[in-house]
Amino acid sequence: FFAPGMALFSAGTLGEAILVPKMIQSNAWFEVHTLLIMSILLIIGVQLMFTGLMANVYAHTAGILPYTDKYLQSIKGLSLEKILVMSLVAGFIGSLGLVALGHEWYRAGFAALDYRITLRQLIPSLSLIVLCTQGMFNGFMLSVLFLDTKKTDNRYGNTHTFDLAPATSKIMVKGGVH
Image (cartoon, rainbow, N blue to C red):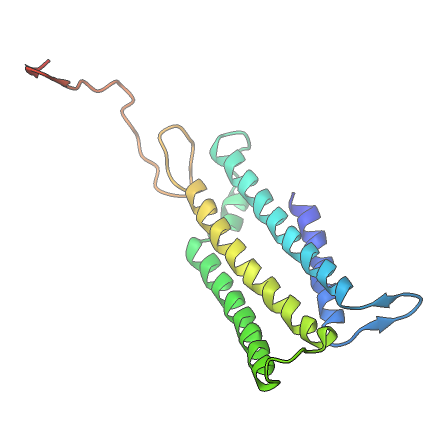
């Protein structure tokens, strides 16, 4: 998951960086439609990387893959808070672009705008908003995988010993306790 995700993310990011300022014309026109495709590649790439990361965390937590010091160090810096901050920054930047575009439309008296110009701003802005949402929800899901549970060998949080012997409990039934 992670390697294909990184490839799609890189291609999408590079494509957007090249196509946002201007169109490219060679044997073919690379215009806003191509920019939209690059945006989708970027979004799918990020989701694949999150999926790969979550699969990897689960495999280690469930005992499918062994823990190594290198692995624990690489995952140690990853926290819900850091993911949320990065996501919110991306969402804020995307929202600024969206508000600026709305203001431009207002200044034009809500008349039709040139789609080739507006989509160059709208597509990256919406991409950042989608990445914000995607990052926040994936961050919460990832934090669930970091939770310490009874049946896993989770070394991310505190490790506890649990008494797995069945607890004796009293059952309340009509007429008294049994």
